[in-house]
Length: 490
Image (tube, rainbow, N blue to C red):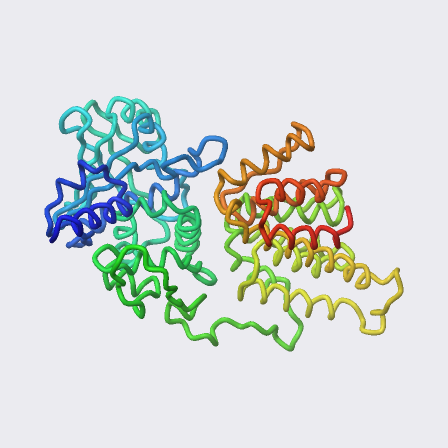
């Protein structure tokens, strides 16, 4: 390998692993690529680590916002023989609590892991079967953190976290988790990749219901890159087996990927996009809502409730449940009690989630159920007719969705720093009390900002003006002005 090519390969490896220049230099020419774990025992322990962190790390985020290292892993050093993992300085406590997670009986399984002190902060993380991760972490802080945790057995030289039975991971899914842990920096560098990882893992732990989240194009390129992307098995599991493992850094071509269940070998006929001709049950609509990934988290359902209260009034107050399905059932039942409630529900879901097969199914089921509930003779232009009121609401919802789409297309708003800058400018114009709810995904954060502006006097005009100040020559800002001009204040 020439000197220039070696430098490029070193930078490329660090992009995937987060390793420092010194760490990458220790790798020989033959190991600059990223190998997969070579045996089931090693795949098991690596998947156990990422599986635990994905269940527990989010609860440790300060103020609910992702820190610099969202899973509290600074870097990994993958080799053919094993894996090294470095925890960021000062994050040993959060890393330990992330490993412990918030797991309960009946939830997803977690595997038993043991952390052994070897020398100083050099540790070994083991799982039954013989796999080992070489862990570098502040031992005293980690030990002190985990000591009082139920289910943890602690001594001066050992931490043992017990297993919990539940939804099991398949062998192939373990291979995927192992491969993703070996490329952990991809999810530090790209918020869209992190969003996908969290959604995909949530899909796993919810017994694989509904469509699997679609990978962002940038992540597809990274995961299929020659020498650095995933191996054949994880590519097949993620629906990337038809994608060649592309070669060079900085390729700009896009790689099409099949979406939804088709990408994973499920026949398209298994996803029904048309409601049944016989009377539709409420459970069918709840089933469709459960396939919308944002509702798998309590925070996503709370966003839905906030927007429905905005539409129906503060008296809209469905009973809340910690489990997903009962909570969604409660929301659907409450919508049935509102004028045109199911149609409004479907519109809000589309506005929040965007376009997808699951959202189309929610819309079609809601429309069919609304048609069953309201006789055709009652549908007319009279203002007292509930459906005529919904038409006005729909138009506003469409405009709001188009506004969020336009904001999402602005490069400055595609990262959290740019959105924070916009918020600072809006607080300067609207007052220090302007504080929209924050969300990890770009779309939901932008939707929150738009909704908060609508509640302020001339707030949307102020938003458009602030964007003009930030991006004075942007065509997207022209579109924002046109959309704002057509939206009536709430």
